[in-house]
Length: 173
Image (cartoon, rainbow, N blue to C red):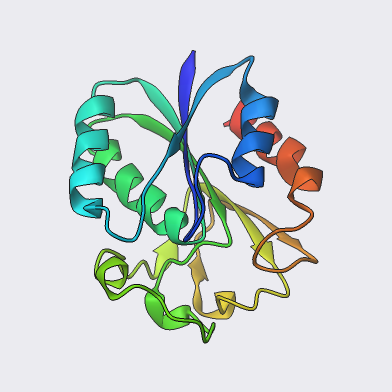
């Protein structure tokens, strides 16, 4: 079975509604793991450990939600150098901290771990049109992005409606 790694967003964990929906949808075809991190996690060390664990794999699925989208993208960039075929799914990703429009505090230690990703390519992008946390209009989208813009907020309250679209993307790529 192919491994699927889910990177949750800020303040979430393996018990998140989105991870449970993904796990249920993919349990017969993928080994699903939630990459858990907290505000005090050594993200660089975490990504290095994951790189070591997966650099010799043939294929891997990465799904990143919000802040976790930045970490999933970083891991993909590290692994693709080794020829690992990566299927990447981003859910309202925080790809550049300067695109954050929310007024609630963000942990400074975590802000330092975020890369400034100016352009994305070769992925599935699920994006809310009423995102109150991230301004997605500044993101440059490459030609190999399958983008699905939905009527929802940052938390993706209707996420269950789009799990099949994610599954279709992963199956066909």
